Amino acid sequence: QVQLVESGGGLVQAGDSLRLSCAASGRTFSMGWFRQAPGKEREFVAAILWSGGSIYYADSVQGRFTISRDNAKNTLYLQMNSLKPEDTAVYYCAAEPRGLYYYTGAYDYWGQGTQVTVSS
Image (cartoon, rainbow, N blue to C red; front, side, top):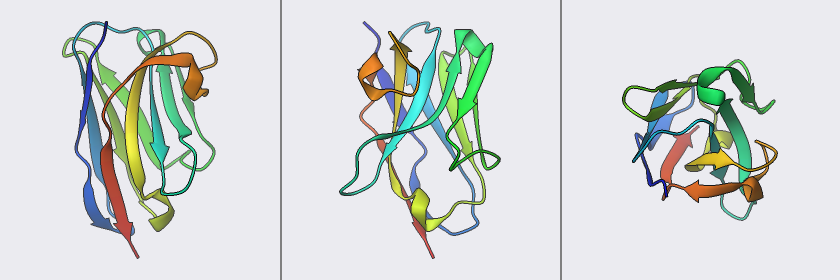
């Protein structure tokens, strides 16, 4: 059983940066970030697999967001630069996918989410 706690969300202006953190209660091998905007389905943002061996991004955030992890601290990060109003959503971290890394149904462990709001 893994517990995940996100932090770092907030209200920023377009073009600003934020760094989200996700603290895990134990060691994990593969983790991902997802987001859910009001009225929309939860969508894949980024994933880091096998303790950092492979990294993947959604096309919408490629080049602006960076996923990383500190294995010693069991903490996952998402550095978000050049934020846009369309990035507004609740951001969730997830751990240990049992299938496709970009599929929400593959993950058994989820955090409670942190709100990111980007004003224009």
